Image: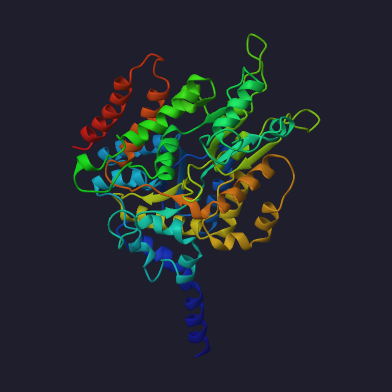
Length: 468
């Protein structure tokens, strides 16, 4: 009798560990040799964090091989996934934004994660679901059917404003908190500040903005002007061709013509390079910016290289992006979520779920990922970890300190976050308005109003034709 009892107890203890194996073995696939391909956009520093946790995962699941692959930027991941969906060679997991997933849904190969989340054996517990920050978690249901969950949040970011604190203090400049001047005496508008910087240093390009699409979309949110709508009629989905949007683009065009600003596409590189530049050109002049608006997750790239003695050429300050209306603060919610794409062998999807669950319910992973990059954790429990508390309280001026400050600014903007409607064609709208802004502000100085307005009509027509 004692031997029987011992066997029963042993089996009971092993059952939680056996369930994932039983899942893999009982779904038409093989238990061993399962390969899960994961597309993402991580650079070397974040890949090192990911690979560390893959190694930890493999101690529990040596039968699963995680093949992680960095595919350029987010749009590069999107484009490659779209291509591979057509040939049936799509990855099991991919970084994504809502508008990307809306496009993938055309293929009917996006897995409803609720089939795993609600599984009594390998799903998420009520406590694990509650640990996700609600706004981030609910993003996975914003595809027209709230009973289905197509994404899980991986890590989040937003746009923040980096500025050369040393230069600002030396020249008595205020950190801008709104875009356009309200009249004489307004010294806190971006319009005033960039004009003043240009006066102080005529060779500078005062402002660099990385994402043209983000700038356009954010302005429509701040100004409450039409952008897109998730409706059935294709022609009525794209609303950005209007006089209100033409007006703010015209103001930005004036800034560009005066040499006050540039963007990533015009500069032909991330504007953090312009912000941190200390190298003279062929004429012996150092051309750089003093304000850079970009992702909070790119905070470490906004820090100038340290001098040989450990000092820095200037100190970086970080603030919220300017607003058009203080009573309607809006800042774009960014940062990757992850979607799962259907595989020919269901065992691969099952294995992908085990890895996804392992990674995204780990506050330690979220903390390390954030401390390495400036991304904001998606789990509440991360903020209770001693290591993360210490990270956020750090006051040292270096790349780690900048990442910590960036994360804090992100959290301060949490109530201002917005996400644009996700629908078939929303990704095209984002692409088109980004290209539109570049074409509009950099058009020849003698361009007529009708030719500039035609740029809006052309972008609208391309959106419609791509979704017919």
